[in-house]
Image (tube, rainbow, N blue to C red; front, side, top):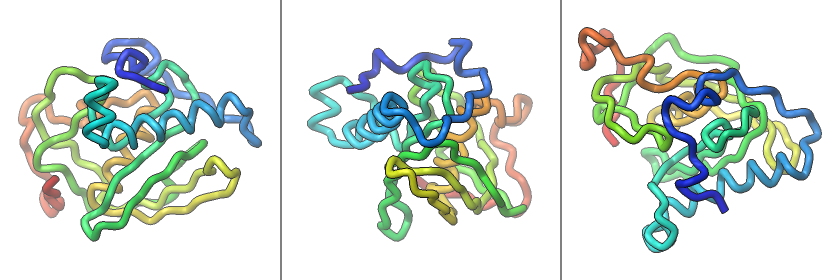
Length: 184
């Protein structure tokens, strides 16, 4: 089981590397790592389990965050309509996206970043993601809102990009005209 001690912190060189593709079919070790990422995110949202093991709540986790530089992410999130998106994906990629942007009004956070980075992180309002699940099946997801933001945040980890890289250094709360503000 992954704990907070397993999650590397901002400044660790692995967080700035471009992660390697996972060979298909994935090895048992890679399947176990991906499965444990999803287990962490699910457990971190259960207040009793999180308290017992000292887990910081999260909605997504990428393999580079546990110092494994491979293209694997896990997301466990409920969208604005109450639909659950619980996915563990190998080699996820954004295959299309909207021109329209969105951002979280409360800003973004990260399990690898302990200090707050106030400001707006502008992302694509809608994305289509493709990846391979633990059963080896290709998954294609059309996402919007908080769910789209979460997947983009995790895929950024695979490319060595941190959420605060997008925050305007001179005007952190600058909005892009027409961008959708999302409340969390």
